[in-house]
Structure formats: structure tokens, C-alpha cells
Image 1 (cartoon, rainbow, N blue to C red):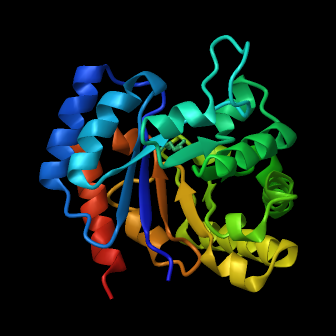
Image 2: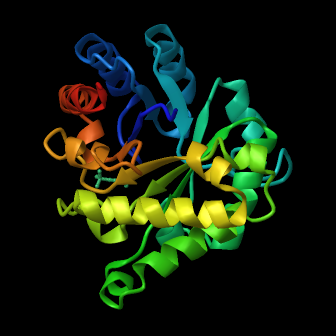
Length: 255
Ligand code: 13P
């Protein structure tokens, strides 16, 4: 049984006061029920937001990390530092990091391994560009990203991984993928993991869709058998809008 998960990726937004106000208001409005909710604020707000999240049963996520434990790596944040602040999840390999910070599949793989070493659950992001989709390469790109990032991992760890399928063209564009596009990508991701590890492992991995998700379209994604939740950018920045989204998702997961 995979627990549905909706995660807010705030990216580089919000002051600490705005972040705190958000958590209070969201907790008041959202009836998450069976859904696990996660907030991923900027590093500098993890401590403050984490304290509030714990009071409301919301999980805490970081948006990135380095793979080394400690050392002369100016500006970087290590896995034990995140663990120390009560972080549960860490987004790894977001397309914005691949694009603006030159993150490769190999580098992402090191981060995924480091996350597991410190008992952090990676939310591994994969997804094709518009050009790759138009060239009919979307599924191969996704499979390659998944297999490189997860290679060499212990199956008992892989089964805890969360994978976010985020087509680059759908991020921040208002042009979400269709439910069935997301479902097809989810199926390919699960097949890839099944071939690398086992069907049992593949069945446990949670797969999210991300890219212009909002309260109106969230149910289209959750209806897909292979999609277990969403990674939300823009619509997670406003407490009312994110609560509407979670409440709408809640209706779709009730059986
Ligand atoms: P949007 O929801 O703003 O499209 O962003 C998606 C995203 O990048 C989440 O990680």
C-alpha cells in the first residue's frame, strides 16, 4: 500500500515570516486525511518551518544537498546537517538544478546514495525537455535518468525512494501533462525499477507527477494507477491555494 504524498517545492521564495504564516494558515484549512504532506522550504528556513510542521503533522523536505558529510565545501549543506534539523525528505536532481547548476545523472546518483546513508528519503526528479518529447525520446530519457540515479543501491533502500516525474516543459508553464501522459511515464519508471531490482521493490516506490499541478487538475493525476501524488511549485506558494489542492486530492484518494 503506497501512501499518497503531496509535496510543496517553494523553490527560492518566501521570507521566514511568510513561511510561518503559510504553515499556520495551511494547517487550519487543509484536511489532509490519508495524504502525507511535505513542505520543502529554502535551507535557511528549515529550522523554523520544521518546528511548525512537526506540530501539525506536516513532513519537512529540503530542496537539495551535497553528498559529502563535512569539509571544505563553501556554501554547501550536508546530509547530516539536514538530518539534524529533522528533515525527512530531500529533493534531488530537480530540472532547475540540472539546467542552472549543471547537475548530471552521475552527480545526482551520488546525492541519492548520500541521502540514504543518512536516512533521508530522496525525491528524485526526472523528466524530459520539450525537444526530447518532440523527438519521441521522452520515455528513454526518463528510464536512463532513473537507472543511472538508482544504480548500485541496495533494494531495501530503493523501495523507499520517491520519484517525481516532472516534464521540463510543464514546469511553471501552466501547461500540465495529461493524466495519461503522467500515467505512461509512471509505468515506464516502475518497469525500469522492476527490471533493475524486482517487481516487489518497484511496487513500493512512490511516483509523483509535477508540472503546473493545481486544485483543478490534481484529481486527473491521482486517478492514474501509477501516480501516487504530486510535487507542486507555483500552486504551493499560497496557503489557500495549496490547501484547496490537498483537499481536492483527498477526495480523489478516498476509496
Ligand atoms: P510548477 O508547479 O510551478 O509547475 O512547478 C513544478 C515544480 O518544479 C515542482 O518541483
